[in-house]
Image (cartoon, rainbow, N blue to C red):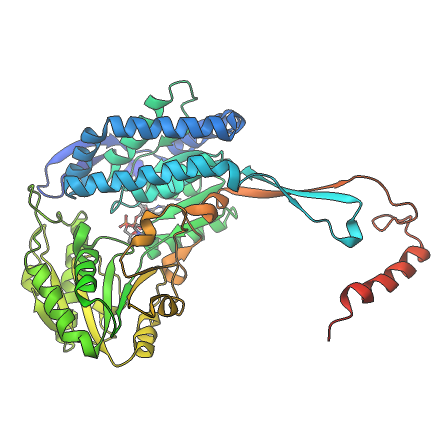
Length: 501
Ligand code: NAD
């Protein structure tokens, strides 16, 4: 980083605002390179003690953290509502999902990461062999704002359960929420060194400083563009990265679908959280035989769905003001290329809120179909067959998640989608099941959070081969090897590997 790029040269404080009103909520000092390095050093110093606690004590510490979050849930949900914009009930649901993941990681780490004995093989039968899993050390977690509790926790809780310490850079749009999480951990665990889980606050430059601060892995959630920058920066030190990036998730509605259930799920999956969901519904491919029924039902449901920040609102404001122009551009492009808005239109995009928009027969090359919209809009395309639906669904640079509505062929269709997760006869079901890994490929990122793979992301396998006894006259890994050894090997190898026709 050059001196001119230093965060401290740009802005000394970060101001957190209510996206519904623009009112200031709080200000936070911005962590510059030095502050980030100091936070990583504290986390590094705390790492041995946290690792040595072992799985059982770490489980207790993580569950105490959960209970603290439950005890403070009213205050926390008010903060999530104020800083992020989502309705209070949605804030509570998000917290509940995060707690499910903390509990799963805390309770399963010991079993998933237990040492494993492996067979040593006929040539090495005098050895015992085992794999042990060691924590990586300090994990730098960089989070987004759309699910500011649930999403970064997919890395934080799993990294902690595996025995790592964590430095977390929350999104600049959810700094208060990120700090609340870390403070609750410290309050629940005053006996622990303060570096086990801490935050560094700031904009992208603070995240960039974290990538360069000597962490042992970077776990990032955010846009593919930032993911690329992080991977490039991490390449300098060969720091491994876990990248959870965007999506353009399709839903396939087959001829034998429960159309009303599909419309209900798509209405919610496309517009809840103002459509700001990485695995939310952005595109629908519906069989021509049920198309009219589906579109009628979808628009009927969404006609009554309203954004706002009052108690009756279904979803809140756009959290990030710059996203509003992107959503508008996508709607305009879809209409300019021959698509039709059957609900809403460009006029649905207000100053802070966007009303639901349903676009039909949109050109497959338009921005609304190709790029992540991240707003409460959905495109609906009519298809003649399941094959066509699958081909169009897979015709994207993303590969995050998807859903299929079909009474008889759901799993068969799911298996043909190039994604990391599919819900059959539901949307987003996989995200609420902690044992299921979550993540994507291509523009959607690298690696997995959640489940067993989510724990394994934060450990290094350590192979241990122990020679239990020496085989007399068989010194293969030594200059004492004899021609008699080689003669026997030449007999054994064809028996072991040369018999297959
Ligand atoms: P973003 O990429 O703008 O920012 C994400 C984080 O990266 C923020 O904390 C930001 O400060 C930080 N950052 C920015 N520049 C950086 C840099 N050069 N180096 C290091 N850190 C940097 O993304 P966003 O707008 O906060 O989040 C929305 C995106 O996140 C969408 O694309 C969405 O699909 C994706 N997302 C993905 C998942 C998932 O699990 N796959 C979950 C939620 C959101």
